[in-house]
Structure formats: structure tokens, C-alpha cells
Amino acid sequence: MEFLAGGYDRNAVLKELMQSYGEDVWNFAYFLTRQSHAADDISQDVFLSAYDKLYSFRGECSVKSWLLTITRNKSLHYLKSAFIRKVTLRDTLTFRKDASPSAEQVVLDRLESNRLWSYVMELPRKYREAIILDYHYGLTMREIALLLDISEGTVKSRVFRAKQKISERLATAAEREEE
Image 1 (cartoon, rainbow, N blue to C red):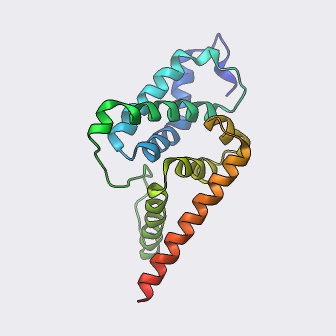
Image 2 (cartoon, one colour; image 1 turned 30 degrees about the horizontal axis):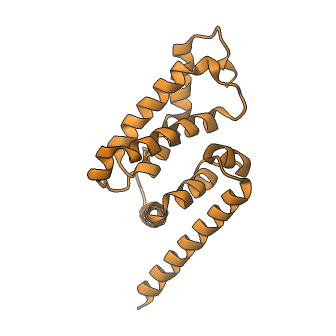
Image 3 (cartoon, rainbow, N blue to C red; image 1 turned 120 degrees about the vertical axis):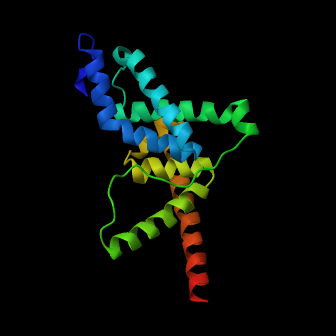
């Protein structure tokens, strides 16, 4: 996004950011908080923050990585708040994809995908965010390391452990289905 330099219409830039990255921001906030209403609030806060800081974006990372960093920080702040520690509301897993299943295979694929995502959502946050940033958002190990403020080796280790834990869950589920 080359329009983040001063002189461009901030409202137009914000609109483009929201159209391009709104779904990614909402989903990442949801992945971290596991609450749709929190993801709604956090998404709004992220874009308000981005709007306020549009011209201070230095271009040291991609715009997507910048927005996901803001999302992560706001999500972690939300999770640390006294209110959320006292009251935890758990919503069912939903994704903002406006595709409606039209065939039996699509339904079966979606069920399997939801099952896999439920395993991802059960991971400890440090593994969950690493694997989501890698597979879902397609960030490089370097971008993830910068976003999480950890080394690339730690990112690789967390992604590996996350895949290992998910594989174990899938194997256990397959064994149960065979019985």
C-alpha cells in the first residue's frame, strides 16, 4: 500500500485498508480471543488506531503485518483486562466466509475444516498464533518473528509443535472413529 505517505486522503486509504484487510483483522482477533463480539470491537479499534497512525507507518514490514501486529496487541490487552479474566464467554467457532454449501462434498469438507480449526483453537495461544500467522495469513517466518517479538527459531519451533499437537489430536480422533 503505497498510499500511506502524507498527502493522501486518509478516509480513502482507511476504506481501502478495511476492504483489503478487514476480514483478516477480524479473524485474527477472533482466533486470539475466541469471541466474536470481542473480535468486532477489536477490529474497530485496530482500524481507528491505523487511521490515527497512517502517516507514521514506516514501511519496515508489510501493511498486513502492521495491521496484524496492532490486532495482536489489542487482543492481548483485551485478554489481560480484569473483565475478561472474571467473565469468559465462549462463542461457537464461526468464520466470515459468505459461501453457502451447495453440495454434499462441500458440507463434508466444511465439517472436516471446522474440526481442524477447533483443534487449532484448543492450542495454547503461543502455538495457535504462530500457526495461524503462518498457514492462514501466509506471513514469512521473519514477519511472524517481528510481529511476535521472538526469534525466527522460536517461530519455527512453535509452528512445528503446533502441527505436532494437531496431528496427535487428528490421530486420536481417527482411532475413536475406527472403534
